[in-house]
Amino acid sequence: MLADAMEEKVLQPTNLKGSRWLPYIHKATQILCNSYAIFVAHFEDQVSPERTTRPTPAVMGRAKNILHYLKSHTNVQFMHFLLDTLDFLKALSLQFQQDSLTPGEAVQYIEACLNGLTELCLEPGEQQRKMLADAMNGTYRGVELKNTTTDTLATDRKKITDMLTKHIESRLGDLLSTESIVQTFSDLDHNVWPKLDNSDESKEAFVLHGRANIESLCHHYQSILVREGTTVTEVLGEYRLYKIWARMRNGPLRDTLLEILQRGDLQTKFKNLGIFAQIYLTMAVSTAACERGFSCMKSDWRSSLSTQNLTRLMFLTVEGPSLDTFDAKRAVLQWWQSGSRARRPGFTAWSSGGRQNQPTEEENEEELRIEML
Image 1 (cartoon, rainbow, N blue to C red):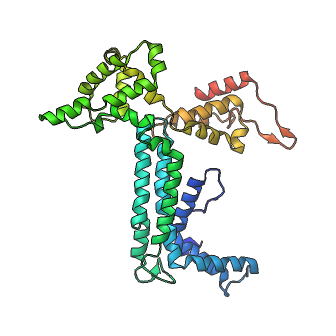
Image 2 (tube, rainbow, N blue to C red):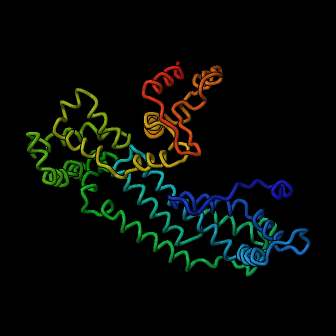
Image 3 (spheres, rainbow, N blue to C red):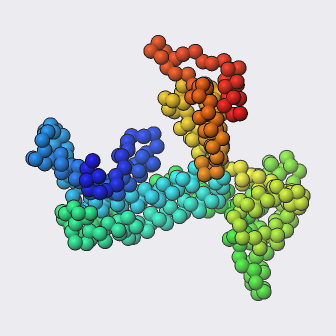
């Protein structure tokens, strides 16, 4: 009602104690920044002497402390700086949740995140700049702020961004190291090769580029090459052909390597170099699919499903099409027209005496078959 009276839009505050701290804290911070005026008005109402029903002294004390915090110019700045920081971390986290992520792409996203944190260290981010511009006259969204200054977070920004940078580098330093095997694979990426023009210098640089790293790959995966009956000389010979074939391509490395593995003529031409294409594309960066699978299982409702139904639903969630491309019209129409059918196929409710008996496999199959007709 308070938001309606102020003609403001407000989202329900979220729980900060979720199993994945980044999305919970990011969403809570975003709600706090976007609905700042609503929160201030709420706590002002809590401490107002004109309230008909007075809250307890403990509640009033907490409300006064929170209100004092929210009206501090420095604290409002920090809220928006925190949102800027979490935006970069969220973007990196979302990239790492892609099943198609390759090690080379992971390195690029990590470096982009680190560069973003460095920008926050040197100057205010997008959210903080907007806040400072809106609070030039000492008020922000109709709230008069205390201790108004331009930017008091320069020192804190440096401490926090340095700490986050060191933590990311310590956790993901193996990917960023110039001596890592991931960096060695970068010489397969035609997007970073030297430009080839009519000069002798550019031709020499192009011809010699990547040879040493390809030899390093051959030594690192020597046991695999021996098993496949491949020699270093054969791999280097195919790498020369690969450079001629791939230098005019504009797409990402992943698409190039997939084409080599999928096209019959390229499989024959690069049968030895294709070993490294398979290794690169199957090198796991994270266990995002497993994490999403656990998230599918951990709910009271899904725990009441039959094992078969839960497995199928998990498969659809983890490996199925996106919501944008899925057409549920047929399934919804069938569900709507079959009034005598169970609304939750394969679902076993909990009773006061414990969980009810699971339906048989034949019953599940029959129920699902009818639902899919």
